[in-house]
Image (tube, rainbow, N blue to C red; front, side):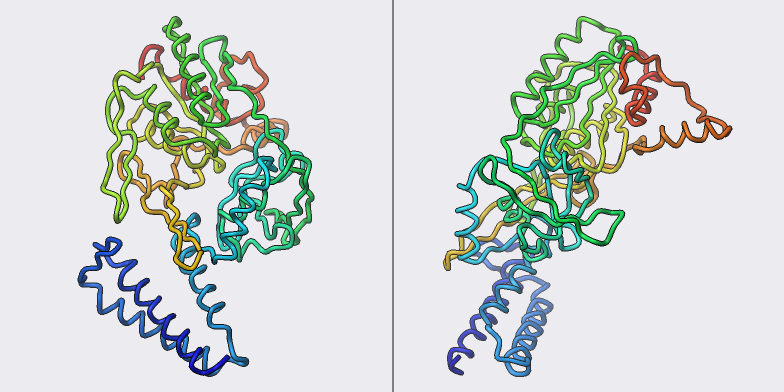
Length: 419
């Protein structure tokens, strides 16, 4: 590469650093309207560091580097270092992404995010290829069709997993019990989600609802069941949001509003997004029946908005495990060179102001998935059983699922007709 070209690329890289550190991340920045900030001296210091590193790479690296690749790698790291959803794509990567978007609607049933640099399974869709392959939440997807997920954005990984019905994709999975990856071949399929589950429990005193996804039609179905339940003034509600990671935020807030008559449902705020406080509409309120909500680590995104609203408004006991932590407003910004930036421009907060992406939703009643088995083993060994009494059951789920069992116990403590 001619020396003049090297210097030009170096200068361009330094200008890029100037935009990133002076423009992109200073408080009060608006596109096209950079203004002074008390953080400016520190930002200029970062520019100097960036320029110094580039000079050492240019002058001292073992071979003459491709500065365009160095800069692209820096941009990938810069965006993905912000949060799991923000990402950068070069022009070539963006064209590949657009082509993958048209490849087909079939899926393997994995909801993923980035964690510690690699793709991590948030939840697994029921009756999917991933479930049949015994892939679990918290499994790490090391590679997709031989491409390391460490160098792929979450957006690109999701696109690579989709395709035509009947086509296959190879993934390398690292499970919590092993450091050696398993290579698994998954066949893509059009997913057919189970219908909304509505079951009577505890001899008819509890209505168990499991939507599986929080789409408009499914939330509408849940609300229809709640309206029908109003005829039985003694009934309580158990809402199961475990492994619910799909849906849209508007539908999620509609569901929360069905249980909350007044008050804040969520907050949204970003550097260029004015703070929004989204409140309950009394016209959308349905029931004040006693309520418990089940969550786990696979509860993500829209479902977390529901759980956070019902917990903070003291409308329900939230039972289970801490949720995954995902709640951003993502926007795409095309670049002049044909690339693309996906950037989280605002984050959702609970009514009390907790950033959901950073903290998730912490249940006020914690219950793991193995406690009932451990309790049975202890009883068989002659140890004293837990100091709890099982609710009267009329479904196998009540006897086999400790989290359901714990939630029903919480509901037993609440008189019918009260919150």
